[in-house]
Length: 148
Image (tube, rainbow, N blue to C red; front, side, top):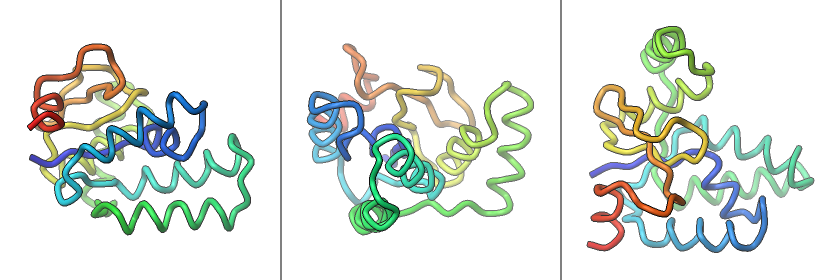
């Protein structure tokens, strides 16, 4: 089962928002199978921006972090089709275009889950369900994936 990871999970793993969030994100990412855990290119772009603007990292350090994550997990490209579907999704469900790109890319890669703290818990589109991986009660598919 493929899962996609939103930028907030990666930002937490980079230490944004404190040690507790960092530890939770790192534990989560280590528990996920690396071959079926996918990163939308959009998530890496957002991570770069968060690391520079919010965490105060240099552009070089932010770029190094982005490259490192891209080395750990396979990437989901943002194609023409992904962008066009995202515009329809954003319009139909009142999402930001960038959140819609993330969800559209996950659907294009046949992910079952999009791990995100920012999007609406339980929202499902084209077979992808958004779930908060830091919630007290994990989505059953995520729980099964983490706990085997």
